Length: 152
Image (cartoon, rainbow, N blue to C red):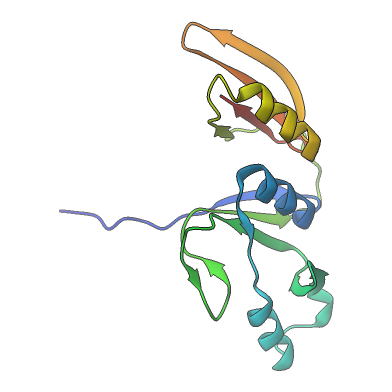
């Protein structure tokens, strides 16, 4: 019996989803999704209150959710939702308190790693430590909200 391939997205809890989306879009070369057509349609139908939205990048967006997507992946035109590689940031009330159980590894390569680490620090990331093991080398970093990721 064969099983159909599943579509997925990585969901990340955040205190400020829009700031996190901006950081990760810049870090990965992704695009912040434009869901304004869907938001405006639902506002026009009075299906949602305006308090659930914010102005982001000059367009109406959900206050508590925002995603970034790979620029080459398809998009559902009427909603602006990406149909491929995505990170979705959702607002949560509690702060991050423990080490992530899941993290991203960004593959820059040994020759580009120092420049990538510096670029990411310029975007608001923090380098925690350099790791050198027989299996490889990488830099452990955190994003602006303290979520760990590695640059290999």
